[in-house]
Length: 212
Image (cartoon, rainbow, N blue to C red; front, side, top):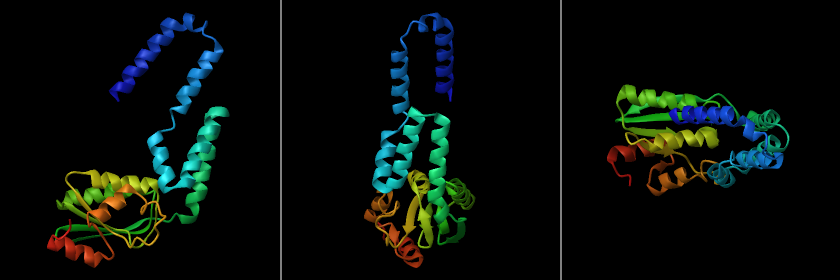
């Protein structure tokens, strides 16, 4: 926040004090600066992740960027939002969660989609439950989840990155081409022995302390 404020102040003084000089800058130079800034708006790390786990979202990003650069920013955002909405409309359903606490493990079973619409609510709900019950082990049951998109995956990554929380997962791994199964998070949990076929297996193994 502070860095953005300082940046805004510096840009303000540059514009005010140097306006007379800017009038002599060729339009071609200004256009190249704007094009460079626009191209840098597309994050390379996000592009790589989308290409690996969700190519449809990748192309939405590219189309939105092209329209924003060569046509109009507002039009690009509208088109991108519309395409994303079309993709999600078929798979979207209200996320319902069943939260249980057994043997010191908070188990959250997801029924529905975990995506950009309800991901934040899911994260807040889980963290509130963890804080209220003072637990350090979380088992996310996705065996009945219909869909997990990139934003849902981001939420799961946030939970897994917390130092005060150990995350386990219940998932049958049936769809190998899904966003979840192709993610680095899922592969790491599988490697660590923290992904289980059923909730009963997960709770039994966690209670016995046999995970890697």
